[in-house]
Image 1 (cartoon, rainbow, N blue to C red):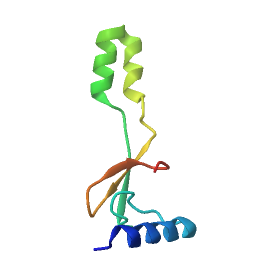
Image 2: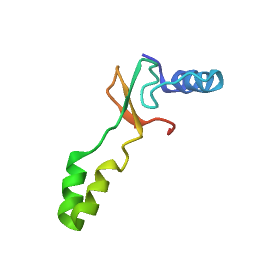
Image 3: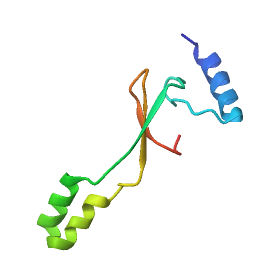
Image 4: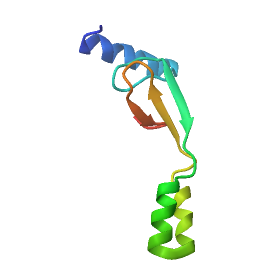
Length: 80
């Protein structure tokens, strides 16, 4: 395992090279999934606001969630 100083140096190098990595452990073995329609949010929106509340199910639907396959940390693509 890398010590903290070595890990920070490795992450800085990957930033310069444009390599995607987990911000928690530095692993480059990642999986990306696009979030879909949220039925739970749609039901709550429909109960609170009626039929127009069904639109709440689409909130965040086009965001990409990235999961580290080593440590399981999840984060949104494009964020650090």
